[in-house]
Image 1: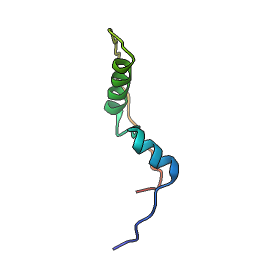
Image 2: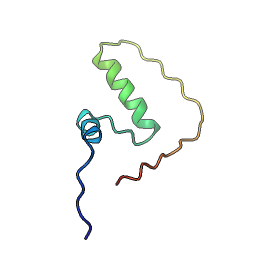
Image 3: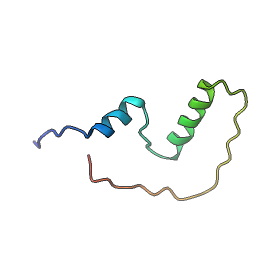
Image 4: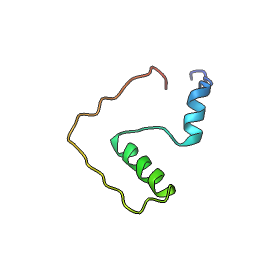
Length: 60
């Protein structure tokens, strides 16, 4: 079994803030939640068909 590595501080803060982006859907979800929290009554979402490029940071 491998060693457990401590996450970098910036990663810990992102996780604690719920800012981890898993895919395009999580970006939309986060924007909607933030809009509702800010009191928005109307939210317009326009989606375009694009490829999602997964970026490998080398961290697990």
